[in-house]
Length: 229
Image (tube, rainbow, N blue to C red; front, side, top):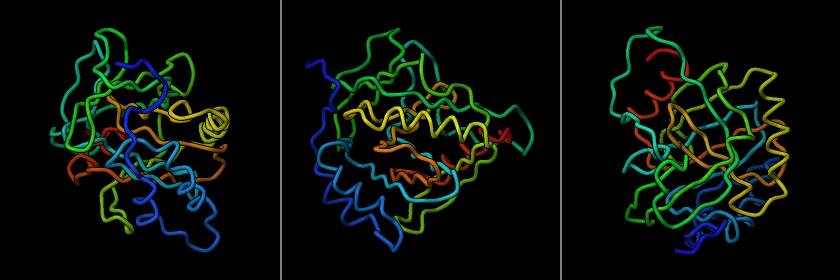
């Protein structure tokens, strides 16, 4: 297979974004994302948008085939039932820059995340730079919610002020890169939950990612991030 920093998929998310992104008044990011779609957004089945907001991230779960687990680690499935509130420590969120995406499974022990093949994409490996980014972040809040636009489930995660400042600096450092190195991996419990793309430093944002989300998966992830599971 070709070793490349480009995504292996050339699906036309441009059309999907035209259909799904609502360019409301005062929302300058939506049209810009549509323009980026052809060259940057390569992973079919996931639609993303960036709009002005209040320092919130909506974490998009990957395909229903399962969340990718780092090569060389063992993970548990999303099917675990949430425990009662306050029954355990909160899971930490890592936000890591994507270094490459290749159309193959990750090499065992490489630390990359293998995303299994689905009907709309082949198996591919997402590699990250673990020496950069934000690791082991404790979030201020997390809640499962249903997208009013797409009707799918998402997890809204709010940062504490210090981490929000770090997030702005981090996204600014990625903004000038070419795809996929202008994307970052959202990792919880050693699993990859999404790879949003940025084209500018994010100072105040609501990042919404649409995917094959379920109520059970999003509620469980929100519970893990807040210590309710």
